[in-house]
Image (cartoon, rainbow, N blue to C red; front, side, top):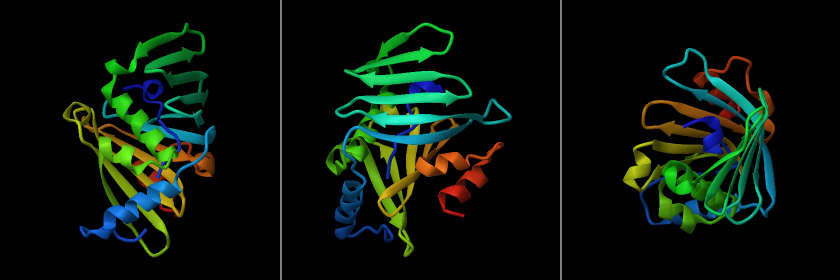
Amino acid sequence: MTSGSKIGAALCLLTLACSANASAPDATDVLIGQLGRPAPARTAFAEARFMQVLDRPLVVSGELAWLGGDTLVRHVTRPHEETARIADGKVTQQREGKGERSFSLERAPQLKVLVDSFVALLGGDPRRLRQAFAIARRGDATGAWTLTLTPRELEVARTVATIRIDGQGKEARCMWMQEADGDVAIDLLGSLAAKMPAEPTRESLAALCKGA
């Protein structure tokens, strides 16, 4: 799954320890509701994609945008220009120096579930998010929190193992997408995007996500 086809790699997404009691789902729903933003919502992102077949991560940066409904746009500005737009069940990609291409979301179930997750998070809609994912939440006394989303559909889980969102208060700071084959994409969101190291490692990005 390429950075362009993922969208995202990123938009924007997702305090107290998560425990298996009756109040936990309600608290999680409250947190997701607080993450909602009115459309159009835009945020800077920087993504490092760690692949087992490469010695160094692939790093791109740009802007993620939710334009309302199920319309998402991922505009990469570095190291090249590339725009991917999802709308009306279709993905349209435009890369610098190449022609436009498009394909149906039905061909990319992992991308479809990512769209559902982004739209649910940006819309502050826990019900929609729970339809696509099992959700685990944990946090600490500082207001830092983590949501771990596990796809419910087996077909999606064969590609995407988990999506982890690290945040503070009412803002998401990072998104980790762990793929079933061992590859992982880590997105720094908002103001944190500007702090992407020149040579990122998983450890250095984990420290940034934790506010270190």
